[in-house]
Image 1 (cartoon, helix red, strand yellow):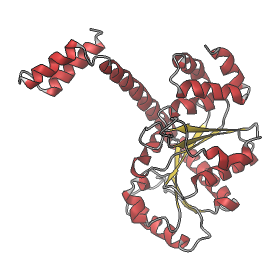
Image 2: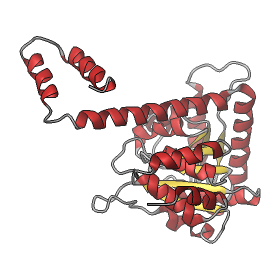
Image 3: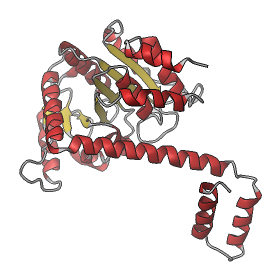
Image 4: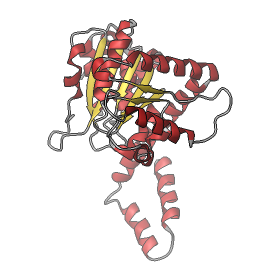
Length: 319
């Protein structure tokens, strides 16, 4: 059993092994998970969480690495969660995005972790919210969450980040395809990466047009900027950071940041509660109560909704 108070204290001191151990406890759904979260709760709330999403091949990992460099130049401690697809054999992270961020491997002010989705849809590992909390408590001032890039279900990042960055690239499909993927609805900042390629200006214009077709914005509402970058050379990255800081300031001024974080916490509580309920229902398979409800549905004595209500009532009342 891990010594949770010691691990938390060491994580606060910036010891990467302690941070790694805490995230491993989270990923492994350790019996100590509740103790870990209770210990971290008073230490969180200071980090700015930025989600980076987009189709595979647009340069998310390269852009993430460039943003780490930019924030480190500003003296910020940075955490990175790179969410990879799961290996079907080991269940572990498959792509290993940390390989692309090797420039930061020896920097004590940067913590990088690849996390496996473990089959979870939405581009984020199921444990990502808790891992974000670990990095927050460990003193990371900026946390970059790079999602796996799975298209339409990628919108889950909007629920986990303070600011969502959507990356596109010329030659990766037009704005209509991006709109179909559903990701144009979630962006706070849009980045056209690989802007040294032909078609970058056209991609930016098309993106601007697609955003203009969205809902009307009133005076003072946030208008998502479009920034062109060549992340491999670090070009345009300072402009991205500037756009992120402007969005953060706008959210703080309007109370949007507090509202987003409140909704994020509510969704997390809901997910934990639903998962616990599913586990309890799973324990009922083979239980006579579930079979009895099924028989009543088949015989026409009741309907599935009424039966579900009875089942939930019984579970919540502890019977």
